[in-house]
Image (cartoon, rainbow, N blue to C red; front, side, top):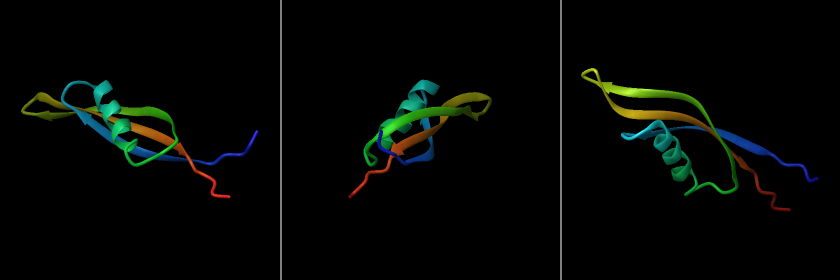
Length: 71
């Protein structure tokens, strides 16, 4: 098995619909500029409030991708 190196970044996705959609938005946006995405791990969920009402769901996502070898 070849050795590999992975980078983990943290993103916050938002949605006015759900936490699931917020996490999905983070991953789909990252996939437009990053290749070899491997794992997405939701580490925190929270909500944005205005006047005592939920106006947005937020998901903090740890996202890993594999470094490419240019040998």
